[in-house]
Amino acid sequence: MSKDLRVNIAGVEWKNPITTASGTFSARESSAFYDLSRLGAVTTKGVADVPWPGNPTPRIAETYGGMLNAVGLQNPGVEAYMREELPYLANYDTKVIANVAGHSIEEYCAVVERLNETNIDMFEINISCPNVKQGGIGFGTDPGLAEQVTRAVKDIAKKPVIIKLTPNVTDITEIARAVEAGGADAISMINTLLGMRIDVRKGKLVLANKTGGFSGPAVKPVAVRMVYQVRRAVNVPIIGLGGISTGEDVAEFLMAGADAVAIGTAALANPTAPVDILEQFEAYMDEMGFKTIADVKNAFRE
Amino acid sequence: MEAKKIVKAEIISNRPIATNIMEMKLQVPEVSSLAKPGQFVNVYMDDKSLILPRPISICDADDNVLTLIYAIVGKGSLWMSECTVGQEIRVSTPMGNGFDLSGLKEGDTALLIGGGIGSCPLLKTAKILKDKGVKLNVAIGFRDEPFLEEEFKALGANVVVATDSGRVGYHGTALAAAMDNGMDCDHWFTCGPKIMLKFVAKEAMARGKDAQVSMEERMGCGYGACVGCVVDILEKGAEAPVRKKVCKDGPVFLGSEVFFNE
Image (cartoon, rainbow over all chains, first blue to last red; front, side, top):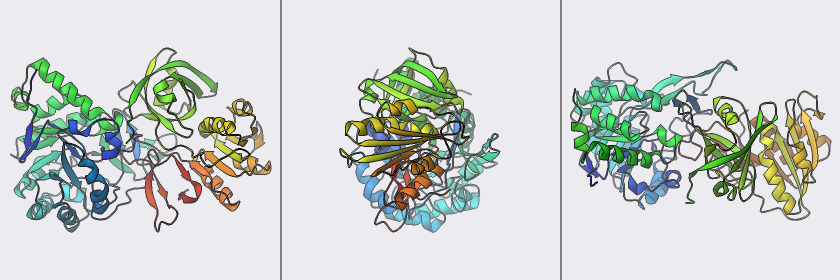
């Protein structure tokens, strides 16, 4: 059945509403399993102005229906990203979203400045990493700082800016309104929930960082609820994520108010998840008689 | 980039070989024919509450059959132990770099030191080295109950077994057993707990050798996307160590290049 899966996110047309979630995608490693050109966009791992070593190990712990990670945004820095990741991605027909990490407004801006002249299509500013103490989540939990960093990045960015929100706040709509006021072109949500696990046989915390970001199918209802709330608070497009692992999950986020979705932990559990989920979503659309993404969204009635 | 995939593998046997240690044989030519010693496969769980794959080292492989030996340590490995003959499970094609055996030639000597379940990937390694005409010395250590001793002996290897308890074989570590038995060789290979690898790497260096060490670290995706399993590596000539992925850049590294934290 002929369908039109295209979505327009802040002026950038994606061929379908699926992207990868930052931190769960690596151009070379992911493309060993599937053709990146099948996705609407790919979102690369958080990149900072200089290389970051990340946190000590163990960084990963499985939980019931999910996982904790405390990678701490290990990344090779923007120069290596431009030298190694971007030329590789140029081989694929997909939009590239560069996820940007920083400890300060200056650091975020330094990366944006550097990437302005590259072929990336959009920026995603990570103000929500729970594993990085300064910056990261610090910006994402304070409406004033969230607005400030958004405005600073928007002032210099030559591509649309997505702001990635943390769920670790009392009222996420307050942060969403703040970044919209700061000029955000889109919002992606949710980053991971702050969690912890204890090994009761060893009597020790499982993660070296003590706490980690909780993700995977278990968090999906929280993410759906938050997307629903934020959709009613702001007008900018929303890229929804949080535990999506099936085609029907994609539809659920779209109905909650997302305009596109990102696949994260599912791609760690199954390397081909982004394309498998896309196929499942297309089958769901066929089954439901939906021809466009708007058809899916409009089928939601309260 | 070499294409990788997840394939279905039929279980042709799954049996205990020691307490809480299982040997699983899989009919899966797509994987076994590609396997190199020291590589691992990701085993995917049927239970959707266990979302991450279990990385299991390749113990042995021929054109058709992949042999995995695993310890029952948690829910995932418990599920594997309950799988039955004829059942299909999902496994990845081989992951990681494996041991580099290219520099070994006929008449060379090799010392293989294994700790517990870490002894398993050394079996395939020993088979390939035997075919090259390399003389094999094997030291394997366990808490209390050894396994794989006969398999190594069947290759004509000089084998010593050590246990922490002293109940069987040498009372102490595999490394101490090897050194007390004069097993120093031209080439060293090791796999096991990090603390053991550290001492093996040091001992090899003290003797002017550089051990190839197969590192273990808690993994997430097992294919290089999540950057969960890292180890600090100082490559020759480099000024500062870099964090490399155990699943993708390893699991085998040169002992002289690994920064051990323990």
